[in-house]
Picture 1 (cartoon, rainbow, N blue to C red):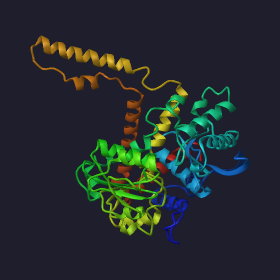
Picture 2 (tube, rainbow, N blue to C red):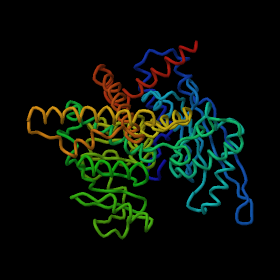
Picture 3 (tube, rainbow, N blue to C red):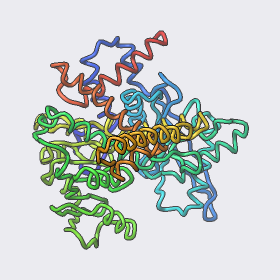
Picture 4 (cartoon, one colour):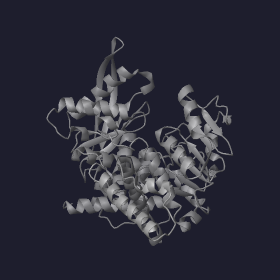
Length: 479
């Protein structure tokens, strides 16, 4: 919980349970099956020592498995001082529902290490990561067929490469060793498009929402994404890519960016790339010359806008500020940024929330593609790309021949020819698969949202779809 929350505020884990309860009340599940889906199967806590700077430092880490209705289980590992068991278990539960909603064949898991990654240099962080991985690998809590981690807050490609290498060292004859973890660098068995996948998924989620005028009207908005004003909270991996793609490709104006040390605002729209460069160089937003700086960043969440994109920590929109939020549409790019109590207040105000379970599922979707790539031992596009180009070239050449023979006088533009004659490479296929996944998942939620009088929002619709799929899997196992 954030410091600004009141005593009445439920914890993140309690919020997930309360949202689960809202959905299951509308479903026909036996009490036993409902409880089986709700509870976390297991949580492993490890405390390990690493000799650093002349002494032994002890670290505490977690790996939680919420549901094994499908295996392997899937979920990121985060590095943060705020990591604790309840948070990891809540995130594992969200992973179960998220995977079910976007139809990736995984159960839900999550991991965390209580550490400030900025307090250690790269070599020290590698030693810590490898020892944490060792503790999990020897208990099959990292394994291509049982438990597959990914990056989360405070981790990235580098840490995933270390974990994959540690697994390979401990399992020298496992041909599928690279599939033990996703989010690796492309040169180490990763996949093109994984780094930006969650941010790209946020973009595709918003595009799909705006394809339905009836849904847009529920948020008291109209038209397309073009020209909409957005506030982004958190310019980490997810927030940066979401803001970048929405501003560069969809015409969205990023009117404010909120970070740890304050907020930047500009009614004409911020240059996301320039802000990111300044942040990387200075460690914060302060001192950026191209916009108005406000030290109280949290207050900017309450500024007028069309879209609010919380893309950092859980619980940033809570009982203490929900009634002052002016955004008619919130898309949860982070996990659990809106607490249960705040969700109630915002719904009564008519705010539409595109839930985290759906909105930030881009990461696990592309992780699934990476896992499949590692198991198949071939990059996507390798077999069909040139065949696609050859077929396209035949069509173009025939059209140009017909034009010349019939003296039609028309020619294909160079830009069209170039795009049409380019076969799908790995990145194009990843984006296509992600776009299709986000569209299909939204349509499943939307069918419940619009098809039942007792479902008043997208979050409950998402839970009903995902819990229903988990329940169907358990029933097929004889439970």
